[in-house]
Image 1 (cartoon, helix red, strand yellow):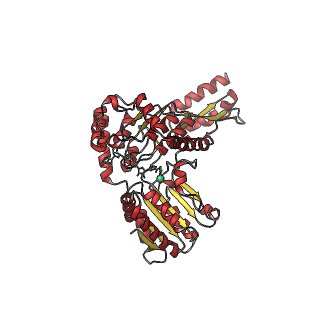
Image 2 (cartoon, rainbow, N blue to C red):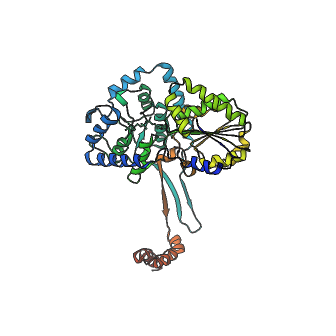
Image 3 (cartoon, helix red, strand yellow):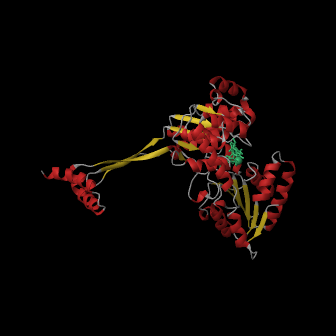
Amino acid sequence: MPQILSSTDADFEARFTALLGMKREDSPDVDATVAAIIADVRTRGDAAVIELTATFDKLELTPETLAFTQAEIDAYCAQVTPKDRTALELAADRIRAYHDRQKPDDARWTDDTGAELGWRWSAVSAAGLYVPGGQASYPSSVLMNAIPAKVAGVERLAIACPTPGGAVNPLVILAAKISGVDVIYRIGGAQAIAALAYGTDSIAPVDKITGPGNAYVAAAKRRVFGRVGIDMIAGPSEILVIGDGTCDPDWIALDLLSQAEHDQVAQSILITTSQAEADAVIAAVDAHLQVLERREIAGASWRDYGAVVVVETLAQAAALSNRVAPEHLELCVDDPDALLPALRHAGAIFLGHWTPEAIGDYVGGPNHVLPTARSARFSSGLSVLDFMKRTTLARMTPDALRAIGPAAETLAISESLQAHGLSVRARLNKLND
Ligand SMILES: NC(=O)c1ccc[n+]([C@@H]2O[C@H](COP(=O)([O-])OP(=O)(O)OC[C@H]3O[C@@H](n4cnc5c(N)ncnc54)[C@H](O)[C@@H]3O)[C@@H](O)[C@H]2O)c1
Ligand SMILES: N[C@H](CO)Cc1c[nH]c[nH+]1
Ligand SMILES: [Zn+2]
């Protein structure tokens, strides 16, 4: 059974706070394991990656087989059915169209002193794209990572994707080909993140690592940050549905299960103003859990981390949702636009009964790599900007330097940084010659 809470219960605040504090992924155990894996890869390079892949993915590799060859890529792509290819291409087109709109503009202007100022955006040179592959395979995550990187103009794209026991989903390979990826490594987990960050003899290091993954992947990304850039913590999936009793409870149940089936530590929460809806959704989830293919994973997630919260008003629901800051937020209410202004913290919001979160996972257009573990309070879903950085530009003229240079000199003296002041003064003196 999930946790069942009612806002009128005396212990509601304590129980809701405990729900927020649940440790689903950042446990000290995971972090200690990840620290040891990263250290091993830094020390032993390919040998460590190969050994860890044998341990965790039950796959024997050599330095020569770490990456798929072109012949393998072509052979896997040829296995994809026309129906699957068409669906993948539709998804790719929609994701590209959405992300094309995110391209930022450079800026350049001259202020009233004559100083020319601005900024210029440029792409990182090489990106490492993590595509999960432990408990499920994710062709869609290939597109969600690679397309914004391409739109940004990244020169070299490397994918890391585990293939447990050597099992390969041909759609993952086709998605990589469609989106212009340069190399696909069949490695996963913390060892893949470490290899992309630090490099090995066979794996060239990248500048930025993006993409979702399980708790080990998320912990590894936290640890390599600084050596490389990362997008965000996109860990085990989450969904929060706000209901007002107007949606089919079966639809809500399936939406909750769609994220629960990702991982035993995924989290699905319903907050509703209707006790009848809460009861009906719980019953519908139970019914689906009898037959769902991934019922073990989804059932464990629902039992251990699921929650149904009954509240008195939608305003209350919105306030609680903001405290959760979920990865995905579905507004299964009669008037989602009326509720939207009250919702500040969520990775992605899905408006109305006709917008299942699963559309966003595949074909909606927005990115499905989204912040989890309450990090939507301060970060956003993957975008073109994650693959770019902004460089500022400045050009002084003699007049501009005359106007603002003395203030710089004064501030340099106040910081006891003599050379700073002198570098400005040398030019001002020249102007006074
Ligand atoms: N937030 C998002 O945007 C988003 C998007 C898609 C998927 N996801 C999440 O990605 C995750 C995918 O997880 P997954 O497990 O299927 O694939 P994964 O590729 O993330 O993880 C598999 C790897 O985990 C490592 N691993 C597993 N057990 C380990 C252990 N005991 N010690 C050390 N390493 C270990 C192995 O190296 C293995 O290769 C799910 O949690 C899913 O919810 C999130
Ligand atoms: N819901 C996941 C993000 O949490 C993304 C995904 C890919 N495929 C299916 N779902
Ligand atoms: Zn999903």
